Length: 454
Image (cartoon, rainbow, N blue to C red; front, side, top):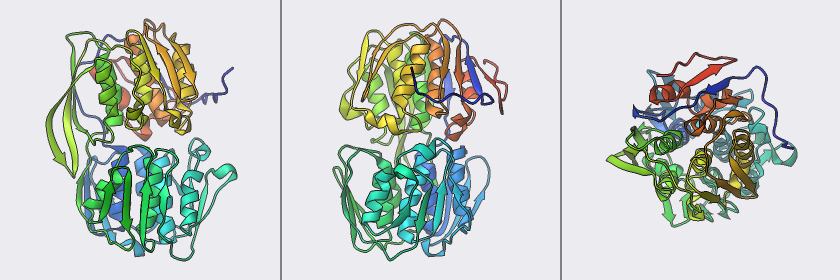
């Protein structure tokens, strides 16, 4: 028996009819990781920062509203446009209420590091999913720097940051590959005495290091090590947030699983080299993905991705690519379920502490749809075959909900995906965009907007 939570009866449901393939051109919303950081760094910088391409999803908007509550003047213009009037970190003040961060582990972990360094009394809360996620991984190193942070049982949120003496820089070795842990410690180090150094066991996304440099901070990197000296001031800059490769992953997988002769273009995708594992893995599976029109945008590499259909072949996923594609594995599980032959995923235990236990959710959901899949402690073994359709419970996880929807490309019957409200945390308008590209998703239930195939 599965111990997965039951979907709320009044939550949004996706019903995806069997689909043939994806085609055309599309652009996904802005990168979620960069959108969070643009608000945080712009809020503590000196001067006006203007952001375009900001993700209008619930998670990043919660971060924006949190800094507004701490006294930062932030104005929203047209779609994806944000103007932040920074006056330096010293002007941030306690909000006088708990700051609600919804479903965002990135928002909570990075803000904890930043606010602990500033000594601002704050209570950080989130939804039921976020309230069950482990925070000791950031609290422990921050406490070793001198921070005062209270948690609930087993180190879970809410988190209560209390004022204290100035933090001291540390040299910290992360026990797991986590950009959020690395970033939390570095952001605390911005306002700590001395140098803060973080060593990682594997490569993780480096948006924090890149964007801090864009704001004028001297961040040193050497392989798996990043360090900075405390007391540096951020200077305002203008940022353009590229399309989110994690959101693009569903369409990359769908394009690869489409029939030979079909093609799909995903425009203006951020191709930070610490985030391109999904492309590398799909190419190893035989996926035909071309990178076109490469350019730099706000210090980040950006390009258009041209995907040709034709199917995929199962592989043993190289473990060195896992940390470079950790958020894309729900989509990659679907790629494996539709591939010819067997796929083995190992070294992905970090998936068990995401918004849900993504290994368990994807294994149980794909089994319910007819897949031949077995979960392991750190991954899964998947034998590719057509799915029969059925009902899959996303358990409130935005990425698993979208992954099950894309599985309609390899299904002979309709797929009902339960508990899809949180899709809007990272990809507002997903169903509509997917339908314009060739899927047939109807949205039902709470807050639904009708989505006709197109």
